[in-house]
Image (cartoon, rainbow, N blue to C red; front, side, top):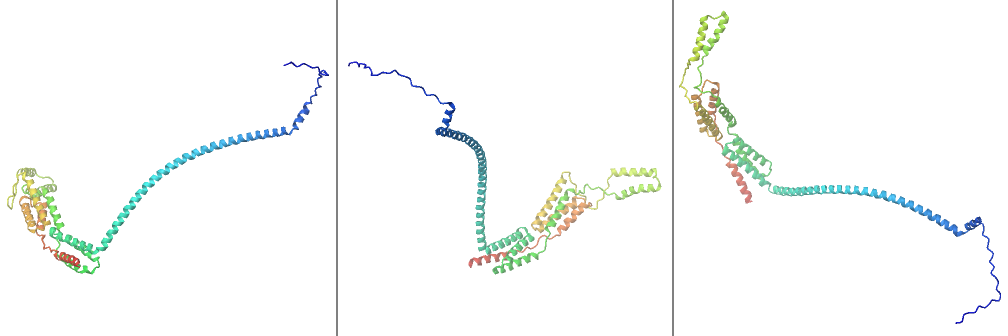
Length: 366
């Protein structure tokens, strides 16, 4: 390639610099800038953004504080709620326990009510049978009291209870049975009354007094005449002034003689002598005699009762001092008890028992 050849321009003028523009003044520049609308819009936008940012930060701070307060309140409420929930659960458990107890009691009361209703129906259905069974039981008890213990008052009470039971029932079929029952009751009322309790108490008093009764062999002679003489001597000495010497000596001699010599008069047989060890067994045997008499009293055994009391009287007369008031009281009590009648002819209640049996048979036949 051939290099280009520089061709000379037709007219070449030297470069002359353009004259520079003069810069406007500073005040005019700012005034010109404020007149620019975009700058004002930018400043307003910046101010609005700044205010919005500050307002947002303030609201955020307030929101955070409110949130913290509400969180604290919610924690407190949550703790209180947990406490209330626990208390409620405990109360619920207690109420459930009480409810279970109430349900058990209600079930028990229902069961009892059902049982009572069943019993009431049975009682209403079998009222006559119940009344007849009670009357039969009362008459049987009265018969046992008469036959086994001879207890007339107890038998009368049992018959009276049976009569009251019949009187409370207005059924006409019980009238004949009640008439028979009243006849037996009248026969018991006509019997002589025996004071078994009083006789038993008198026997008990004699048994208790046996240990204190004095024996005849231990009795001392009574010297009431000499005692009156000795008592009269000081009185006479008081009246006359003083006793003579020989009177005082005689009184002392007589006192010494009385202490050495024992004079005793017996208008009956000599009392039986007892060895020291036999006194205890004599008292015990006497108590056994009286206890046998008590058993005979309860059994209405007249012969054994009188025989035991007679033997006890003979022992009192032979071995004990009859001049003592305690022995005399015991002898008097045994004598009165020996004359008491304890054996009476007791009627039986076969008529009432037969009437009840016939009534039951007639009812079953119908």
